[in-house]
Amino acid sequence: MTWNKTGGTIGLPPPGLSFNGKIASGQGFMVQMIADGPIVFKNHMRSVNFNNAFYRQSKNNTVSEKEESHRIWLNISNSNDFRQTLVGYIDGATNEEDRSFDGMTISNSKTDLYSILDKKLLNIQGRALPFDENDSISLGYKTGSAGNQTIAIDHVDGVFTRNQDVYLEDKDFNIIHDLKQNPYEFTSEIGTFNNRFILRYTNSTLGITNQNAKTVVNASIKNQKIVIQANSNIISISIFDLTGKLIKTNTHKESLKQFEDDFLFAEGIYLAKIKLDDDSIVTKKLINKK
Image (tube, helix red, strand yellow):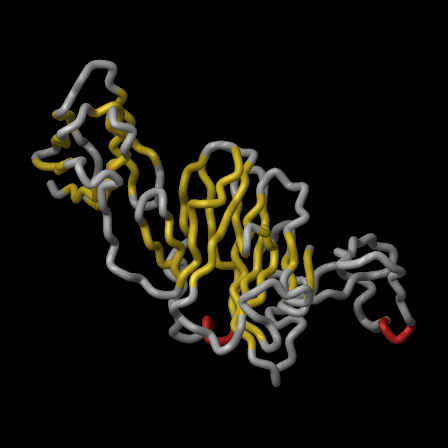
């Protein structure tokens, strides 16, 4: 659990619970210090009715109804781990580092999700008011479990309870996914990844371009066949569905500028990630219609 003036996050499931900064007697905690010196606790800091539960069934914590706040709690989960992060637009916060509103991630979990501000990894990030739908937040994650991962909204408040959209951009696959409609499922290797995801609030047109302007790649699916042509040799082809799930990989040892193979998957939209011998990687969107 982490808590500051922006709000609180939990470090273990079940989702939907929230941490309001109050803990029962006999439970340990850590304090993130900004300078050397004593920590003083006084009797007036005590609260009644909080001594029999660590979590409190509440969706509105640490911010009074008179204060303006617009917050998103995001979870990352896999078969072994769960972590939560918070981004909040709240009175008193700025878009720079704020010691009272930003909290660095201090998780020792093998899985973690955090926002990134000036290279700092934050479990909680406070942002300035008024809320701007054109704002965007870099997100990073780490995982100790290879395979399927899920990023989902746990709960929200403020403008996000109304008509404000929330999207997750996956830069690896040029996907902008609506998190209010469904959680985002993807596959990942074990490791730390700080350049893949962006939290955003508008959905601009998906644009897929070549990394090298001189590289030309054409790809299509027709009559249950996938055909890819390039002006450079094709090294490998990875096919993903729109959830980011890898469904097929082809690797070529010989020089190959045209690739053709059966494509016996369901109708829908797919992404082909094509690696060429000039070290460029091109992503193409494919539509499979039977």
